[in-house]
Length: 140
Image 1 (cartoon, rainbow, N blue to C red):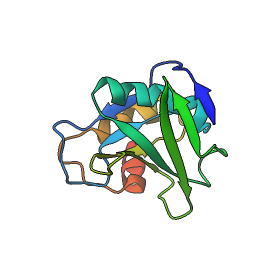
Image 2 (image 1 turned 45 degrees about the vertical axis):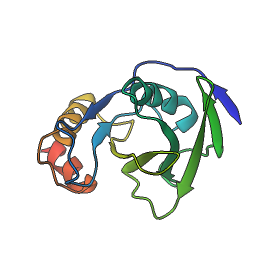
Image 3 (image 1 turned 30 degrees about the vertical axis):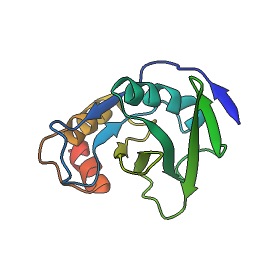
């Protein structure tokens, strides 16, 4: 189990107002594919917003190998990698699985202009595109 500290601020954009429509709730542009390096900043944003995230589900092929548990700011977070999880989606949930946030993951190597458009589109009110479709829109 790793103990981590918070690095640079997370590049994230939340959909406002919150809605149950659509495939994801926010956009996130990590700086690398290393979850142990990237999650502390994202978790800091969520915890600051009183979201008690304790579990992360991610796609095994998209991300580098990660431990099953990490400790961030003295909080235990369980990581679950899955082959069936959409590579462009990372899901964060609380311990009771009652609060879930699905993030559109913008590949870290993306061009900054493209990534900014994708972040903007991911937070649009009424956005209902699939993750792949939204990234295709951001390329235009």
